[in-house]
Length: 321
Image 1: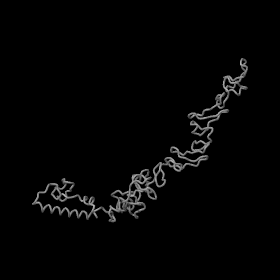
Image 2: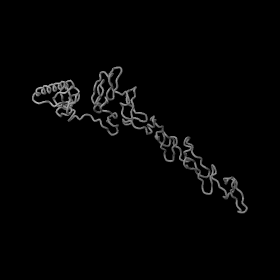
Image 3: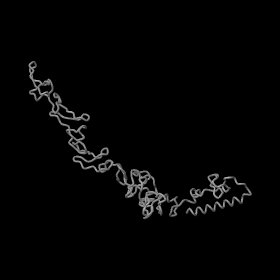
Image 4: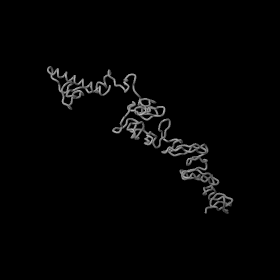
């Protein structure tokens, strides 16, 4: 029912009450503020009544919102109760709060002209979606446009699309050139939803595609492109290197492996390269050699470079410098 018809019926009801009140004025005295009794415009009537034409009457919205015999109707005249519960605008699993999963992604059924009131229910050209119904806004210059629409400066009509990021779902921003909602920084579109860029195909704030990696596969690690290496390889700088000698923390900036000492092995202790020498030898810079007091045959076997004969012990031994 149109607002004009409701207003006319309400005026008739008020007039009827006023006449009834006048007819009974001689029998019973009216209680101030009671229904059908006189009031001064702007004064308080009792029980939620309104003062209209100096008579306390029911509010015009009361009978239409709560009376089951007069249910509210949609623009096509159908009842909004019973068999027509209206569109669902709750959260669909995988979609942000208030959006519904449609074929081309998550949509606001209450304001998206491509899915107005239901998935795939597109409004006609020149229409926008307002409260799940397709409407035409002839002149949008004195008002804001509803839902996911904006005011066209050329036609002065509301047209589908965004003008501000506030119109877009969470994690999305408005591209004011195309008037489309797109994924914000650090997010990319996957399965119709803006998801964090935490994978090799979209990594970091710029959602970079990580390059291919020899002896491994690309990976997104802490927002940066890295690698998951095959067995026998170690990762450094997004590349895979043979896992021995190791690359310790102090050398990871340039991915330089530790130098293996002659006669020994090398490992990482904390962030530093550390030589490991077999029993009977000591770490002698980049080699493992005999230390002081160990039997020797020549100078090269000793870390000090000195192999001398000990007459008292009757053998050659390494000495310190």
